[in-house]
Length: 390
Ligand SMILES: Cc1ncc(COP(=O)(O)O)c(C=O)c1O
Image 1: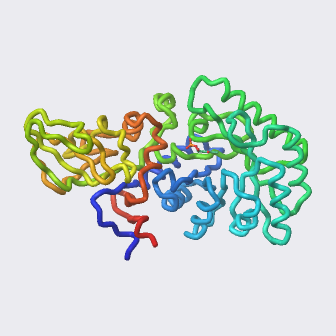
Image 2: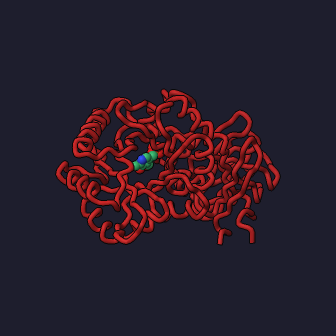
Image 3: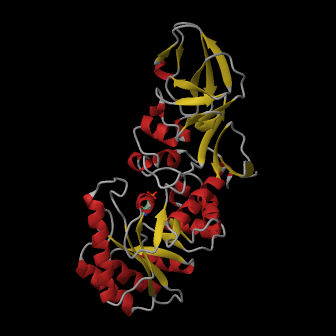
């Protein structure tokens, strides 16, 4: 069976030209910075491999993932660019990472001691990015004494190569944030400390999308771009004042699989929460919460059919949901759940608002059951159907 084919009437479309455009806009916005494309979580649901390839073609030089598994998957698929794993990887897997040229994030001195005992025999060096916790409160060195100990261990051993040092901001997506400024200053102090101990990692990075959009001052030479590369704003606050337009790459589509007329008093879906008040046309779409089209999106969300907004009615089921139509429409008609039709647009942010979450979560949750279709210059390049990918 062909993993590139799919047989259902629901799919996500990823416009790779938009990814490319967003990277190029950043290159102009921050000409001095190298770009690390963050493709963890299957490229925020867009497809890690395809996004990575497009980002690298468009000027990114590094990739970041959360898990060693994600990095290994990219290597297996032929990606040769540098990859950083940003979460903790167990020290016993350090040599596996090294053999695959995958850089690891380190924020515990014990990690170095343990990893050292596992890699003594390997001919590969473990590439390390030291993570400093300047205020995010998640992972990272906090104590100067522990960082000094770590710096010593790295300096003493041929097994380690300090490739980078980084931190992560907690509030870069808020214009007025004291914490952001505190973190920035603290990070610079730590870089100076490392220098004074003889450790000068060539890559120094702090910025996520929000910090890269607003530009963060300091001796930094790389930005880690996630959400904005996909064309989504890191927050509603920053969205009001972007330095250049972001182009949304992800859209979601389905087709009517059934159309019927309801009589007044007829009800729709589980719990019979929707009752027709007059004669109404109702269509069924083959997408539900198992596809990541969350149950909480109804009532509230609409879809676009023939360029018009139509509300989702009744409860969203596991595999299907219903839409009120203004008139009879043919089975097979295109419905856009995220994206544009004619003059109408449903943005990712609209869906996030209805689901009471942030835009990041929406494409991440569109499940593996939904095939991804990749386009460039309006033409289909590739289909990826993960459930046939065995
Ligand atoms: C350490 C780190 N850097 C960078 C990013 C990318 O952030 P964004 O998607 O806001 O650009 C993330 C994502 O959560 C992250 O955890």
